[in-house]
Structures are given as structure tokens and as C-alpha cells.
Amino acid sequence: MEVVNRYVATRHHIVGAPTEADFEVKEETARWAPDSGEVIVRNLYLSIDPYQLNRMKRISASHLAVDSILPAQRIAAYAAGEVVASACEEYKAGDVVAGVLGWEDYTLFKPSPAVLMSKVADAADAGFPLSHHISVLGTSGMTAYGGLFEVGKPVKGEKVFVSAASGSVGSLVGQFAKIAGCYVVGCAGTQAKVDLLKNKLGFDDAFNYKEEPDLKSALKRYFPDGIDVYFENVGGEMLEAALANMNTYGRVALSGVIAEYTGGGRRRGAGPAGRDLQAHHHPGLLRLGLPAQVRRVQRHHRRLDQGGQGQGGRGRVRRTRERPVGVRRALPRPERWQEAR
Ligand SMILES: NC(=O)c1ccc[n+]([C@@H]2O[C@H](COP(=O)([O-])OP(=O)(O)OC[C@H]3O[C@@H](n4cnc5c(N)ncnc54)[C@H](OP(=O)(O)O)[C@@H]3O)[C@@H](O)[C@H]2O)c1
Image (cartoon, rainbow, N blue to C red; front, side, top):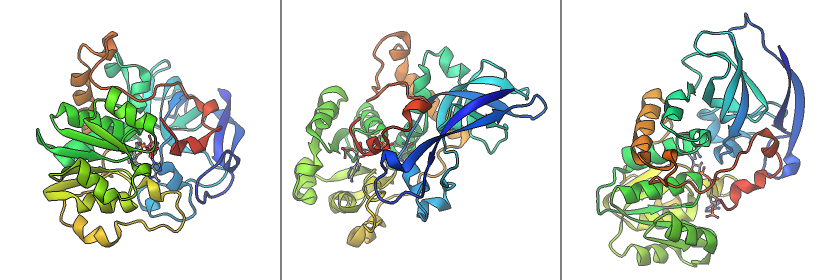
């Protein structure tokens, strides 16, 4: 079987903020054979995440954890799709899968324990739309769940601060923390996002960090009694300001430092506040893809969803975006990585 496969590739290593000109759509013939042991998937939904920027650089500390993305090569990414043909018993044509696929129309993979892939039949039976499998049930949901509950360990009544709070991870963290009975404040970069956090996603409060001349004082204003759990998505000055406001025995879940992915020479650590970070619980989140953890996340989200959106109701957790993407949409606006959701 042969199919024409269009895939998105970088033209060169990315420096700074990416633009459309840094990418191109390439075409190849993908071949699947019945004796190959391979599965060929038509991709339907794709997750485009900030960490991929670091993979696209010539040099990045992230390359120690994930493969780098080389110019002209296909880009592996978390996605959901439908099996077109399969040469192994585990999968059959028509199965719907979610896992590491790619920025392309079709992806071929050979099942093995090292390949992060699962059939979505069970959760689909529970009524989750397919797009949930790359968002709430995908890496964003795993990061939010693992970071908040397994690292942050929030206790009812505690004060939680979330940065990049309107993003795919932050928006879930805030909602989970509210469900856990915490007081939650988020920061975001526009008034529209601040309104979204307060009026739709149920945050207790939110502020526009771009309008705050002094982040340390801003956080002191929102957390006069200090922060118990900080969910860190941004880095740099935001991390310094949050650390300056942490309570004794507070916990910091380090999810990422997005402010520094496109900032060229800007520093990567917490600067002078780095030693304060040592005082807080901050294990990394690199092992979130373990199957047991995926199952825990799915059980957790299914409980939240009971009688909820899967059955046509509203559920208890809202996502800030739902739009079919597909490979055609992956190319045009990579700069949206830094934009509103
Ligand atoms: N998605 C995942 O699966 C995943 C997994 C592990 C770790 N992470 C980490 O989680 C963090 C958030 O990822 P995400 O997937 O939620 O991203 P996202 O949905 O793409 O949202 C990112 C948001 O970050 C904010 N941002 C961008 N530049 C910023 C800056 N210079 N200073 C402050 N905020 C900035 C922007 O919102 P504003 O307009 O509000 O600034 C942007 O909308 C990243 O550090 C990422 O590396 C993500």
C-alpha cells in the first residue's frame, strides 16, 4: 500500500521565535507492507507544544530528554488518528489511537513497549471526544495532573499560583486545583485571558503580568499570606517573584520555562533565587508518559467527567480550545505558540 504523505519540516535550526518562513511542507510516498509489522495511521488531531521549539534548536538542554528535530526531517508529536492498515495483531484497520505520531498526514509505527501509543476505545466508550486524547488526556493533561497532584500535592484551602494560566497546561492546573478546594490565582498576558480565567474557568483571581511593573509586589498583593503551591510554566522573573512569595514547606512544580525558549541569550534558571528553589519540593516531570501514570490520569479525568461533557453536559473541566487541526493547519502559524488560546 502506498499513500502520498505531506509532512511539515523545519527549513533550518530555529533561533528565537519561529515564523512561518522557518517551515515547509514536504511530500513523500509512504509505503506499508503486510509483512512489515508496521501500523499506518491517518492523523486527525495534533498537539503543537512549546517544548518542540527547544527540540528544533541546534543546541538545547532539552535534547538530553527528547530527540532533537533536524531540518527537513519529519516532526514527531503527540497526536490522535485512525489506523488505515496494520501488520500486527494488536491493531486493526479502523482502530483509533493516540500517542507519538507526527506533523504529517500519515505516520507509520512499529508497536513496541518503547513507543508511546494507546488505543482510545475504552475512553471513547466513556464518551470523550477524540480531541480530548491530545489535550486533557494527552501530554497537557498528564503534565497538569502529575505536576499538581504528584509534585504540588495541594491540600484543601491552600493557595495555588499558576503561571501561563490560560495555556493548555495552566488552564487545567487551575481547574484541578479549584476542584481540590484550593484558592487559585493565575497570570496571563492579555485582559481577555484574565477574563477567561476568572469568568469561565473558575479561578479565584487572575492578573495580566504585562501590566505589573513589579511581579514580586503583585504576587504579594494577590497572596498576602504567601503561596503554598506554585505551578511553574514560565521561568525567569516570574519564577524569581513566585519564589520570593513562597511559604515555608511550599511546593514548586517545574513544568517548563516558556519565557526562555525564544529569548536567545536570556538566562534559563531562577537567577539569584535559585537557592530558594532548593528549599521547595521540585522534582522534574520527565517521566509522565509512563503507562501507569496515563491510566491514573484517565481514571481521574473520567471521574471529573461523570455525567459531564461526554454525555452532552458541561462536565467539570473546560478546555480553552477545541478545534480540529490536522496537518494542513500545522504549518501556517507556528507563531501562535506564543499567542492567545
Ligand atoms: N503541553 C504539554 O504537553 C507540556 C508538557 C510538559 C511541559 N509543558 C510546559 O508547560 C508550559 C506551558 O505549556 P502549554 O502547552 O500550556 O503552552 P500553550 O498552551 O502553548 O500556552 C503557552 C502560553 O504561555 C504564555 N507565554 C508565552 N511566552 C511567555 C512569556 N515570555 N512570559 C510569560 N508567559 C508566556 C502565553 O500566554 P500569555 O499570553 O498569557 O503570556 C502562551 O499562550 C511550557 O513551559 C511547556 O514547556 C507543556
